[in-house]
Length: 74
Image (cartoon, rainbow, N blue to C red):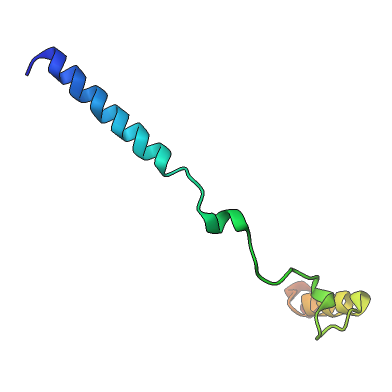
């Protein structure tokens, strides 16, 4: 093959690679709509905690201290 034919093929391959690369950058219609699930809430706003933030924090602290080896060995 001649040098000019190789240059034409290389140019064609590069154009195809760029076109395929840019085609993969498009957004889906589902991605544009966003997340449609339930909204996030704080842990203390759950039905189990009843909205009592201080009580929930106390329970978490107690549970954390129960997992601390140093606190249990004292």
